Image 1 (cartoon, rainbow, N blue to C red):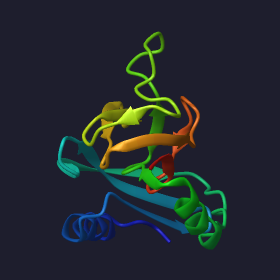
Image 2: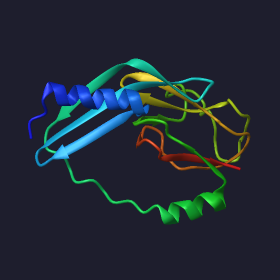
Image 3: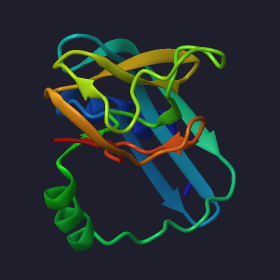
Image 4: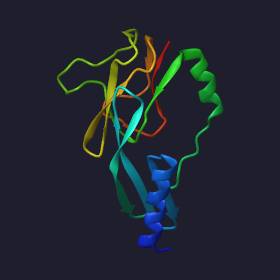
Length: 154
């Protein structure tokens, strides 16, 4: 399958109309990912204008994930704070700075809990609820996926 410009434009239109952040397609040795820049502010996710198209070489098979056990863990550990985008997770504003939060720390709604770097943009992730950070599920500098649990707050 050759990805025609018209087909790519249709995918970009779907992202905009459906308020999606990313679409990825694979066909044999070809793969395409189209994603929209996302900026997180005091309100939930706010999207910026440009849509970027990234075509890549051979794609690796997608890993299968189980969702049922994760749902049970969430109930035990508190409310999850999830990643609103694909990017790199950072616990502090700079390598030599103190982390935004640590396990056991109390956070208020709106407090910055981490940064996710996506497309060379640093996006502050804020707590949607107040409570104690029970567990941080991601290591500093680790890549994260959209919807991945970053930490639990109860």
